[in-house]
Amino acid sequence: MRKIVAIVFLAIIGFYIISIFSAFQFGDKYKGVSEHYVKEGIIENRGANLVTSIVVNYRGFDTLGEVTVLFLAATGLSFLLFSCKCEREFKRIKSSLVLRTATDTLFPMILLFGAYIFIHGHLTPGGGFQGGSVIASGVMLLFLSFRSFHPNHKTLSTIEVLAGISFAGIGLLGLVYAKSFLANSVLPLGQWNRLISAGVIPLIYIAVGLKVGAELSGLISDMISTTKED
Amino acid sequence: MVIILEYFMIFLIVLMIALALFAIKTKDLLSAVIASGFISLVASIVYLYLQAPDVAMTEAAIGAGITTLIFVVAVRKTKGREK
Image (cartoon, rainbow over all chains, first blue to last red; front, side, top):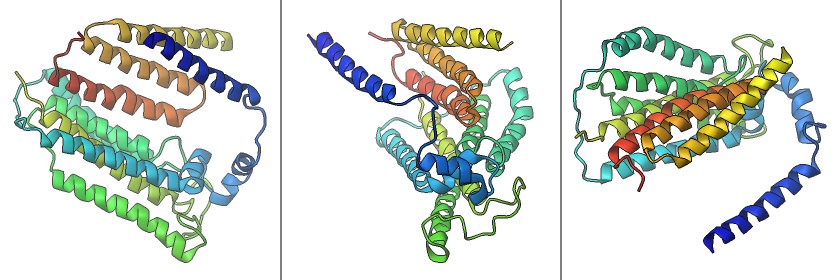
């Protein structure tokens, strides 16, 4: 019986999805606001990466919401993990020599690559989320190879708070000095395809990158350091 | 060249479907986690082919890296086998 109900539900959902997609032709025309983004986006923001100017400028409020959602998820996870009475325990198993040597060589490069991604977010593909998660995967590598490694949680949360405040603060500056929240006319736009250009987009991406990196590192640290080994 | 690339993409998509079925069917949860991490890795290649490098980066870093680690830790905290 339950299977029949599930199949009926799936059929209904599938029918509506198919009917929605059959109403449009894939990649047919740019209509309305997307046409404006594609045609005027580069001129209005001077960012070489059009995706960035859509994500940070036109849809900046959504990005702020995404960062908030990630923050809430990390908070909820650490609340859940620390509220249980499991012992916080570190077992110092030595990882293999290959992993340790590779980590020694690779970790600075991974950090640098993550920083590169979010600093050049307005020029090349990628941005705050991507750079932050690359940094967090570097921290993950440290956790895997040095079992006694333990980051300072206070530093991580300070970075996170400062980055979040600066994101919201840049948005409020737009509200004060320009016409809307997160408006891009506070700073001069500069020349196209230069590192210092595109107004506040690089600043916002640096803030998002630091925030996401600190948050995901804290999350991984919470997950691993509450693991009991048997 | 383009045709070869297209066939390669079809192969990758079939591989993703096969891995997803394996992840559902297997009783060993660790294998299922590794299969789903592999799906993310293949998906990031497909995104790159579809000219979405931003999404490909996110998928490779979060889907294949961090999510896999979190699931592995979660499996180790629990019993590690499906009933």
